[in-house]
Image (cartoon, rainbow, N blue to C red):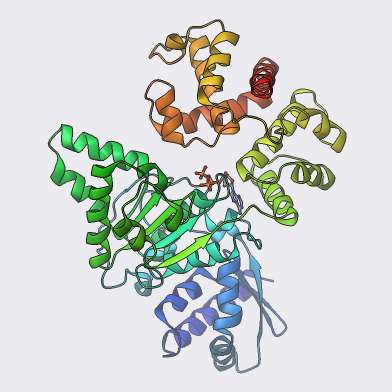
Length: 468
Ligand SMILES: Nc1ncnc2c1ncn2[C@@H]1O[C@H](COP(=O)(O)OP(=O)(O)OP(=O)(O)O)[C@@H](O)[C@H]1O
């Protein structure tokens, strides 16, 4: 197809968009999706259109089918069929990379914020760029939670408020929270989204009392359009912090601001919370996430392998997925170990190799829970350090590596939250833990010594766990 022809299709498509803009049956939200599409060319009576994701395709193909067919007929004076292809490059860039809202959304007046939302763009709580809806695999176990999360991002404070997502550790609750934040920021220019772990909320609150900064604490948590609060169970029995959260929640809810909460248990089973708090959690929508079934686990591994550029055949992925069933973080950890081992040995990943590597990683049913104390104790002993040194501020090379390995192992072998791990290792920030986790994953694939140290330490910790 020549450039002229493509330009021609471009101008026809712009006319199609104008016709759709004038169609009263098309909602402003649906228009937002039309702007994300780009025509690629016309082959006979089929128009090829690129869209950034499955959701956009679905909206155009189903909700807007009739309006789109009519508009195409009007512009091309013929019945035109649309064929959609997904091109993630069309996806607006994440906020972390470019602090401004993406141009593709920005220049369209229809994508301006809903009238109730303020228009200043601010950075509120870092969101992990990897935790977006597109990287989230949907299965029976999380379908409802995913749909509710999308609905809340698309219509903050209108769909369900609060949205309360609960379930065991490592099943995607944090991922969904971040994804809501990313997606809402894409849809509404300048929307103020704050993500916070409840332990950070507690720390901020305590510091605000210590520093007499109550007003700025309120400003921080009440001047937002969406508050995403992770792992609310950590507020249990913290009466003063709960009281403050109660007022924050009420202030936001009364002003039609969205609150999304995650927890390991449903409100009714959350102990250490006042009844008025628990009942508020039930005002909106409760949804759980369950351990994923085998097919979903395989799909998650496949997506992860592609995303991280790891090469592993399907049967090896299936083997890993069949062995680790209750925690997606562990599932990902297993994939990293297998591919790191293969890379170090310049061997392809296959089932036999996965079997060898995972032999020690698979948790024994009924064994004692692994604690931070066990991990820190074993790590310190392994590197010939004292516990004080391991948790100290010193930054000698051995200490930094040992500390990062301890953080990585806490992340992989326990259900502890990031702030809690940081706290155990000398009161470090949760971002330090994220960095350590990433660093060790990378080093394991690059340096045999690190891989061996992590493996040997894991074995020692598990051995200690087995012996009670
Ligand atoms: N459905 C999914 N698709 C793809 N990745 C997933 C899915 N569910 C979870 N993950 C991945 O599994 C890991 C653990 O998920 P996440 O941290 O969101 O769990 P969580 O339920 O918040 O756990 P915790 O209660 O311990 O905080 C993350 O890397 C996340 O991206």
